[in-house]
Image (cartoon, rainbow, N blue to C red):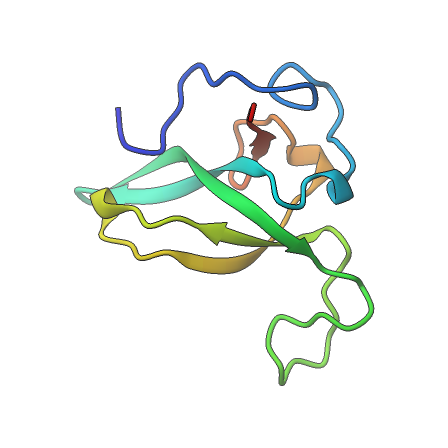
Length: 116
């Protein structure tokens, strides 16, 4: 099993057993997992990667870059990805849209909430 991959993750209310996504404003400061595509030995694989929701776009002022003209929608989350030595990745941050329809789904950018 690869680092960051969780086969049978224990998740809280609003986690793996839940049918509906939790309200996004309840996720700030919490750890989630996002199903991300990686390439290993030339083959595409999906793994669940842990991240922390640092903040949410406000829909009024947040943009993808400072020079961007378009505002980010309210379902965009600023995520902190921890260092991953297995993939030689440093800690990083990125915006990701947490779509309700991808909550608890085994889809690209599917997401779930972990038990604390």
